[in-house]
Image (cartoon, rainbow, N blue to C red; front, side, top):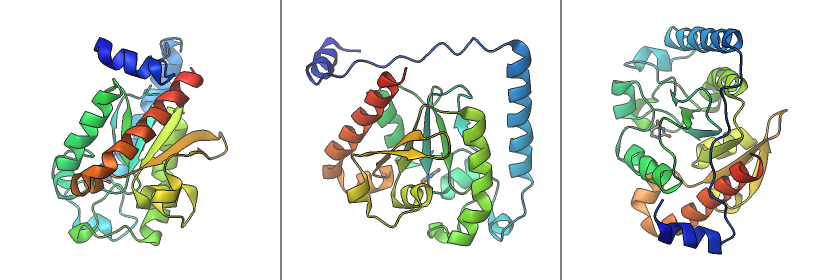
Length: 219
Ligand code: URA
């Protein structure tokens, strides 16, 4: 980290977050966990539970560390993600990488997934029935990962996860909790929106700072 940035964060009362030691699990436990991830990945790959399965090139399961503290959840794969089989690989993905870099994180140190595992045609919004059908996969990913914090990117992910119809402008900047384990959840703008509205990047950075504070607080 550059010393200027360090001083800046220190002046804001933010301690730089470092990942907890996750090597404590016994080899047996981690083998079982990896097997569960593999089984889940295969279930998603073969999923035919909704009509999106007929128009996908491939499913987009998720990417990152199975020991990540931070889970980032987007909406659904777009055209490039459908081709590559990885979330956030288009222009919005490049911006997400830069956002992670500003938090001293990377694609490999967090976990990135979407509400939907298949691309909706013409990148239309996911329908509630599609989200309902697909969410058990995401819930299983969350149960396996047990992240310390979730960052929901964009209105669709935020409203779906929080079961709310509040606007993103009202949801962002606050800490919510998700699920029975009350995982801290922060909402922020989708990187695709930030590409269209760069002036929202300052608020987005504030949200990322909130995420870093949560990770630091709960470490
Ligand atoms: N937008 C999303 O919400 N998810 C992706 O994977 C790509 C773009």
